[in-house]
Image: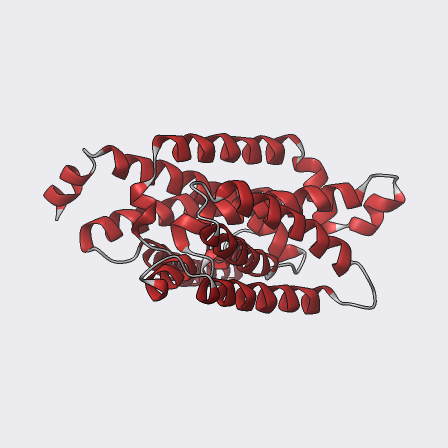
Length: 282
C-alpha cells in the first residue's frame, strides 16, 4: 500500500489534486466558524445546489470551462440570499430551503431535457457526490484555484477583526457606524467562491460537511474564536490530505472519503473535549 502511494505521488495530476484539496479545505474551514456561529450553517448547502443548477446549464451549452458561468451565478445567488434573508417577511432558513430545492430540481430537469451525454446518471451522481475529476485537473484549473484560494485567505486575514465583530455582535457593529451589511456581503461572496471551488472535490451535496465539520470539531476542544479558527484550519487540511491519500490507495470516491474522515475527526474531538473538561473539573 505504501509503495502504491509513493508511486502515485510521482504523477503530476496526483500532486495537483493534493494542492487543490489542501487549499479548498483551508478556505472552507476559515469561514466555516463564522457560518456556524451566525447560524448560517445551511447557506453552503443552499449555494451548492445553486452551483449544481448552474453546472447543469453549463453542460447543456457545452462550455469548455463551466467556471465562467457557475461562479458568477453562485455569487449572484449568494447576494440575493443575503438580501432576501434580511427581509422579515421571508425568514433566512425558508429562503435557503426554497433556493436549494428549486436549483436542484431545475438543474436535474434541464440535464434530462437537454442531455448531451450518454451517461446522464453518471454525470448527475459525479456532480452531486464528487468523482475522480479532482485527479484530472489541468494546470490552468490548478492555477485558478490557487489564485482564488490565496485571495480568500488574504481577505480573511486583512478583515479578520471585522469578520470577528460581525460574527459575534452585529448590532453593536451597526451602532458604532461600521458597515455590517458590506461585511456580511463579503462573507457571502467568499462562501460562494469556496462552494464553486469545492464542487470538483466533494460534490455539491457534500460541500456543507467540508465547511461545517472542522468548525464543529474545533469547538469541542477550544473556546476562543482565534483558537477555534486555527484548529479548524489545521484539522480540515489534515482530513482533506488523509482523505485524498486513502482514496488514491483504495480507489474510493474522493469526496465521500474526505467527509468520512472529517466525521471520524469530529467524534475524536468530542472524546478529547470530554477528557479535557473532565480533567479540568478534577
